[in-house]
Image 1 (cartoon, rainbow, N blue to C red):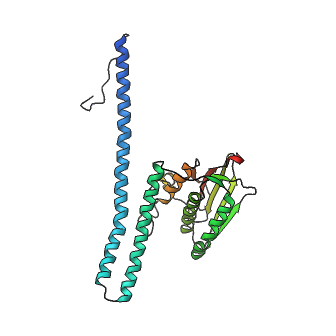
Image 2 (cartoon, rainbow, N blue to C red; image 1 turned 180 degrees about the vertical axis):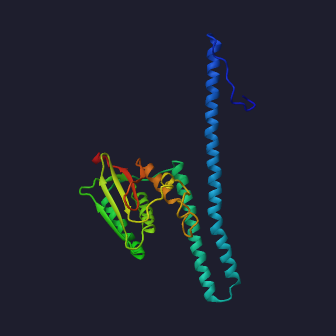
Image 3 (cartoon, rainbow, N blue to C red; image 1 turned 90 degrees about the vertical axis):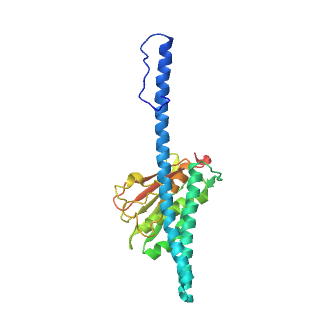
Length: 270
């Protein structure tokens, strides 16, 4: 076993004190095999993460190098200004990716020091919808809210919940053609408050539904597309919701997509 063999078994058939030792040895071997399997999966995930991060960082860095060289060689002031704007755009994308990676690592590492409060979700939904109406209008999409009467407050951090809403609404707008609608709904559930972002867009490819909330997963239709992002938005949404004690999922929808998540009710409403 010390040399790496894991198919060993100690004969534990005898009825004696030695049989107990043999059984314990076999149990130890099983536990060692299981632990090594978990370690192998973790290391595989680490390698995949590093490969994906390296790939996603390589693209903006390469673009920044090209733009920097163009600025260096550009003699026309108008051209220099144009390249400078593009360079700043790439830097914004790079900063967003780094910030998302940092946020996701904190969430996965349970390094959370949020202030939770009694949050009136109706006000937060209306505020978020109003802030994103212009983005929807530019796409030709109608963005609206649908709130249940007497919506109970949640026990949550308003900034983090708003980030979840912004991510889900932005995705819905991006995947909804002009003339479509995106609806943000909220209603009371048995012990939670349930929020939904429903769109009339292209929907989610069945091949993507099981991996939709995985980090760096961009989906079959958008992978490789320019401006597709790094695939961290929905993973961060899941981490935030689960850190609040809720859950997030893709629900069935006759048309478009329907993403739902829950938050715990405030204690006064439980």
